[in-house]
Amino acid sequence: MIIAVDGPAASGKGTLATGLARHYGLPHLDTGLLYRAVGLAVGEREDGPEFERAAIAAARALDAAHLSDIEALTSAETGVLASRVAVIAEVRAALFAFQRDFATQPSGAVLDGRDIGTKICPDADVKLFIQADSKARMERRAKQLEQRGVLVDRYALYHQIEERDARDMLNPHGGFYKADDAHLLDTTLLDIEAALRAAIEIVDRTMALKAGGDAS
Image (cartoon, rainbow, N blue to C red; front, side, top):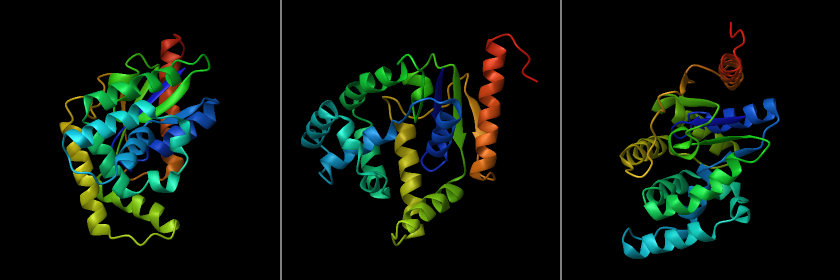
């Protein structure tokens, strides 16, 4: 079983994907970490040919060892860098095979990101699109950072999230769009336990329907 989980930053998709993987005993890949690792590798270089060349080289050289520094990879600043490299077609192409290989392993998998249901796994058994309003997402990300002892400027964080959304939605090479057959789950008013229950219900109902069973 392949489960594709898409949605904007801090919508809860990563936490839900982790919970779904645990519930169904499936391996999980946060594909956003791939782009974040590439973004982190190129740092604050100015946009232009040199930036693109460095990003493409970093994407082609990426392996699992580059995904270990979770604190650096999940910072708000790295998220902005990730959205800058994600618009580069060659970067997306370099990371495509990595993601497809993970998704198509015999055990099945759960992948979360921004184009899983539309580009990476259009044939996924279940597709979820997770959304929440910008204020709720900002507050969630702020609390995550504060739990690590990071001092958070909520005003700046809110605008980083809005900037990331705008860049992702304008991305001509992948962007983030809800697949036609994806199930929409709005987590704005849900805590993680309620959101996970809702996601599991969607997966179970979808798989039961595909098996010709009773989904009631």
